[in-house]
Image (cartoon, rainbow, N blue to C red; front, side, top):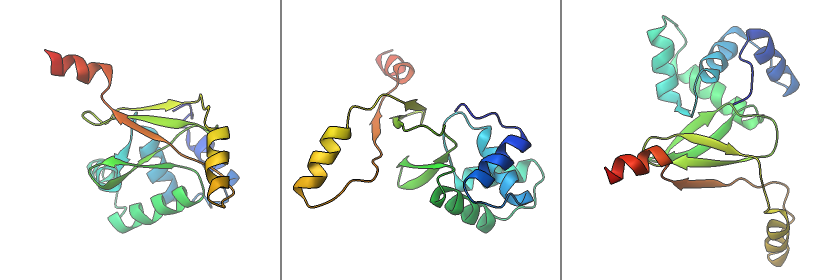
Amino acid sequence: MDVTASRENLSELLERNGVRPTPRRLEVLEELAQERDDVTAQQLWSRLRERGSRTGLATVYRTLALLSERGVVDVLSHHGGEQCYRLCGDEHHHHLLCERCHRVVEVQECGLDDWVTAAAKRHGFVATDHRVEIVGLCADCRRAAAA
């Protein structure tokens, strides 16, 4: 993630995406900004509780749903059926996801536009966006498995 996690920058990010930067929303987003990979709502809530926050689990879920809906955070689905959340950069990208350690890498290169357009057209669709999650094993987990 390339986002500088200052409260001011996160507040501006929310406002750019049409989200009012309330103290609870900023608290959730600040905690998420500290995550290198991705995190479930439950994990994020647990971390907030460890820091003494009184933000409730329902508030965390509502906040993450709103942030996802407005394009502030990405939602990934590789974590055993649970949704995971990640604060990513603004540019179009895809994700490489390690199925063992849950490492997430943003991949900016995308050569899919022509294929997406053609596949959509064949089925009577007009593609407006696409997201790709490539699940596998990172180099560290492959080395550990080989040892």
